[in-house]
Length: 163
Image (cartoon, rainbow, N blue to C red; front, side, top):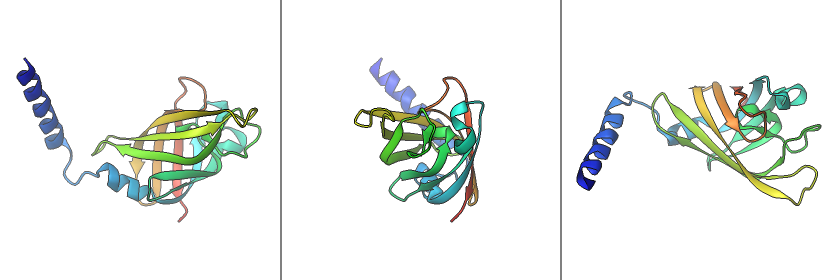
């Protein structure tokens, strides 16, 4: 039975590899494509991403870390630390991300430590899973849940490259 399971697993992995589109981006290639600074325009019914946090700016780095420079990144559920009023915890550096998958369906897994806004010495871990809907040289569309925000409310972040 163990050998049959191993064979089925190997066949599934081979099938997934063969079905990936030719020239499909790997997670590392997509991560490199994100490097730079992007403006953010959020689209959601989640009130945490309205007003000052409906837009923002994010910078992705080669070491697969990122900063929220201004506003909020709704797809990840992160609001920049100085934004007020906000119920969202303040993200502490580093905010890490990794790209999972290959081909058309790729996910970004984001993790960070956050400080409670009312009790800054209280730290907790947060994370989010984001689906990368579109990513090219100058535009990205991210859809995600996690981090700070209304449960069950999908959040869309439209990114436009600054540099």
